[in-house]
Amino acid sequence: MFISDTLSRDCESDKTEIPEMNIEVHLVVPLTHEKSVELREAIRNDEELSKLVETITVGWPTKIDDVHESLKKYWSFRDEFAY
Image 1 (cartoon, rainbow, N blue to C red):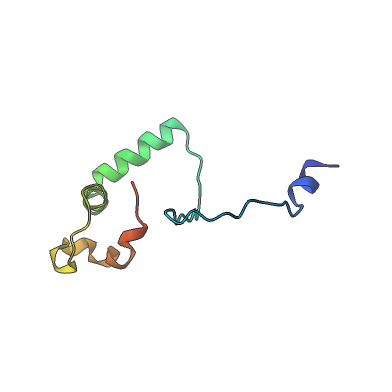
Image 2: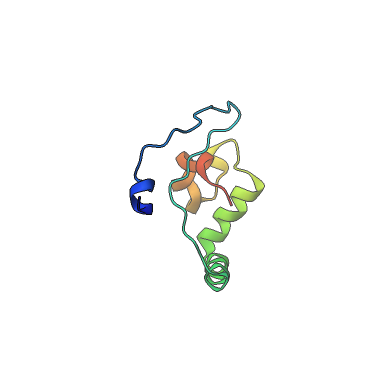
């Protein structure tokens, strides 16, 4: 049997839910160390992304009125961000 054939088979999986965890992985992109450093530097140099990372790290305000104007467009997705 070829690997591609094996991987395409419907495998039995453990579908046990963990109530405390609601995780969705939409995309995983492997990065080299150099690209990771380059990406972090680009985020640091971008004013809006820097503010977004800071807000994600510190925590979102409870009211949208307290969010920086440039970040209000992210308000409805605030629970989906992680850094």
